[in-house]
Length: 217
Image (cartoon, rainbow, N blue to C red; front, side, top):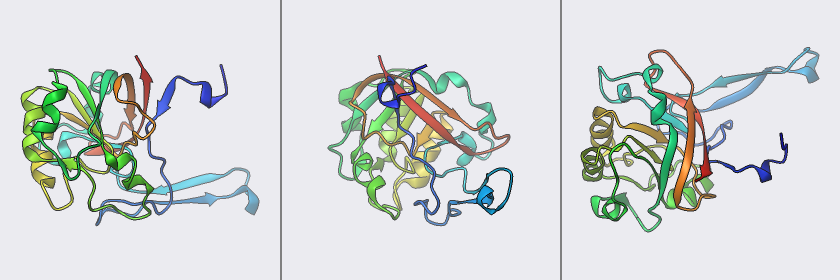
């Protein structure tokens, strides 16, 4: 196996977990420390994590906003493994609308990753970006009507901060569209890819951190 990561055909679109990283306001802080350390005489190192299931790159299960919705352990793997399209929506300033999505003609069963200015701006900040690009509720309904399978976006929520946060989640998760949030698509050219995205299999959870990678088709 080639150990040179730069030679790999896979593009890592995961935002690394790090101590003190931006999280959704009101969510638990991301706290990472070594609880056991070899430099203090221990025989091994041991990392302790304290974080929300919705930290950095993660998935939302329907249960996140739907009381009796499916949980993370009920994820059908075909939702996150297979062909996908990365859509160029870098022109959007505020919220993604149906007019922004219509030219891309989403198809039933498609996995779509939405590349916005978030990848190039929001993740460069040391604080939570309240002005990130999100999906307006009518665009969420448009995706439901097109019977899209999976949607990924490049910041911490499909719904905006103080705008359509509940509605967008309820519309998409209520239709069992599987949602990937917190991607970083800065290194990706729009187009067709193979997606591998595996969340932690947490029983009964409304979400889970995940690792997501792409390979050009």
